[in-house]
Image 1 (cartoon, rainbow, N blue to C red):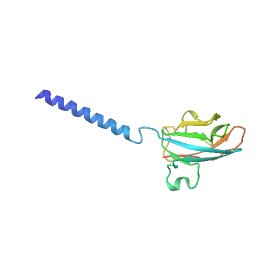
Image 2: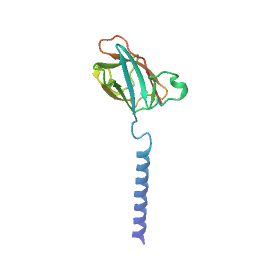
Image 3: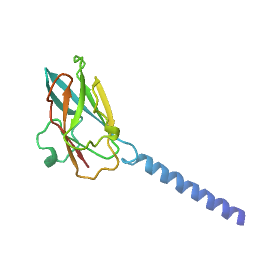
Image 4: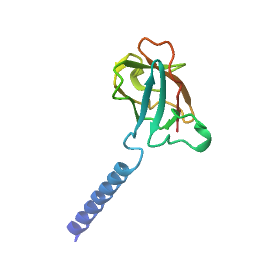
Length: 145
């Protein structure tokens, strides 16, 4: 009888552990989301548009096409038009919300960056997408949810 009780207790512990693990895996916070911003270039002018929606509430971005709302630990990918053969960088007006200052150096075609975990919900970061050889670029925004 004691053996059956121990077996049942261990079985229930294992079952609870498995269910808890699956719940964590399926929660939205366990994996960083991947959001993509499409960059269209016309000489030095860069326009940014978010693929798949900004993820923001109506009042957070107003009508800014390049504005995106994201969570700590999410990934953001900036991707140039296929026809553009130039380098770009991300230039933040203050601190960067991106891990390891991702995007600060010129790079071709595409840049995938992880949002820092140490940020505060509601923080907003203005930046420019600057093409190599140009002084100014677009001025989109990242808002932390």
